[in-house]
Length: 53
Image (tube, rainbow, N blue to C red; front, side):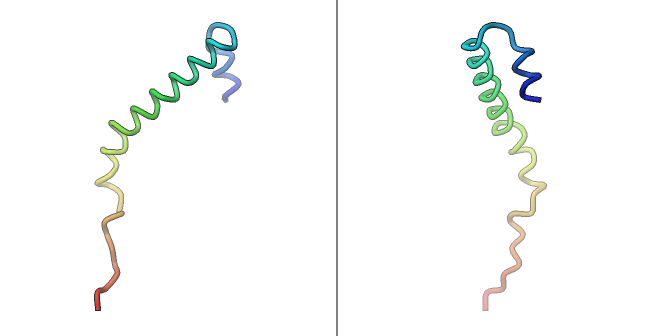
């Protein structure tokens, strides 16, 4: 799959590397700004079952 993306990007090796970095940063930004906040209430991280005795 990564080879397909690499061949799909225009330009020489340096331009492809720069575009790849930009795409990765954009994906991380979208995940942290939109996907993770949306999914947080659906995850059971705050459902603790430890008893205090």
